[in-house]
Length: 197
Image (cartoon, rainbow, N blue to C red):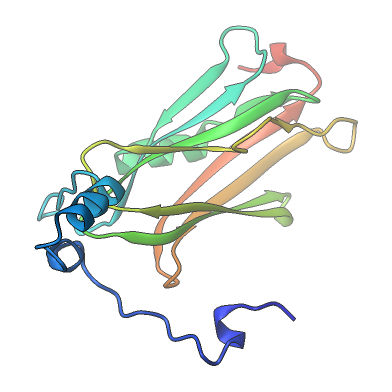
């Protein structure tokens, strides 16, 4: 049995605190104030007319060796761009090495335990469900970028049974169970790069 928070009766999770509360606590302690600033960075509240805490900026597919360029970038800042991602499949040549980078902003408040949940479907049947812990992030002006996998590469499957069209749905959830964003994309596994339109 694992020692999670639910299984340890003595553990009481701390109450959530806003960034302003965290920064104002122990404000007279100079070293603690500097330590908090190093963890939280230069926090920014974000636009008042946009309540989102996680704002997706782009998804990038990075290849180790792909003719015509090693990156495909999908901007995700508007509804139209998110819809374009869904309708613009990319090609994975079987056995190719690739990774996916997500660029996003956090605004208004800390997002604790942000997770990337990627569900992949073929002909409507889920064939993979990959959960990646991205981390906890404070609001700041500069966007964050997480690359998955963090080390090394993913390798596309090969063989006749692997070739074909796939769809995927990515959800960005946090420790509180809140869903901050959902995007869908599509890709094909093919025997040759030249079939990339």
